[in-house]
Length: 324
Image (cartoon, rainbow, N blue to C red):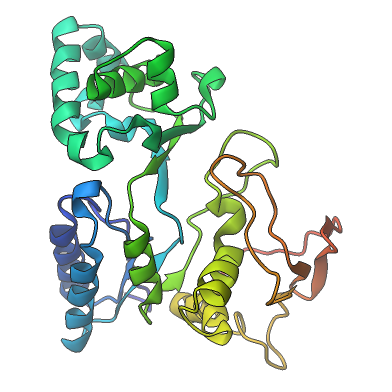
């Protein structure tokens, strides 16, 4: 496998999470590859607490000889396309086929029924758990929760309303809808349990955004300072050295990146200078575009790119490849 590994966004992280773990383990064994469980979580109110079982299964696989580790972002909400709320059969065949289905009243009723059956135990009858992060089809709804939208429409049927809002967001492109939503489906106890596990890598599952544009997940701004401030300093889940290792040397080693993620003579100078007594995230689900506190300087490839909260304009970043 040329020194690579199998990184999986598992088939499901809710009701079938244990089966998905087993599938990932089987693929790793069958291919002879190490396994990386991407942003591990257990989702849905009815599944809260199952991280104890998922972590135990991963530990058993390690004892049996499989190199398997998870990574995680430290929040109780995920972010995905609104289309994930629609059953797969709705979008089969692309946008034109999906539009035709959604134009049929009988099909819409079937969809509503399936959404009720699928999500009633996931969101606990609380549509405020879903917030629109970005949408080209309905930019006027960005930042609003499904509960806000349903209330504005005078709606009363919680999960039927969820289906209606999802169909409305799909617009003319049900199969390729770019509307992103934030889903509050996890429990803090599970987040802490996974983060505390010594094999867990800290990762944001983030992407680049324009400051102030849209209503993104706060993990884009706060993942690493949140771990350093809230989970390391305030809650004492692990030492400062271990927290830093989880987000630097550990992922660099997993990716096979030489001379990255460590402070050593001859290594690449990727350095963040922060105050361990002050560093903390300030981005929230209500105000996601907020920079962290306590970070003084950021150096990339030996060049200062951030100093005293101001970007220097330097762009020294490069595409990283694993050495052959």
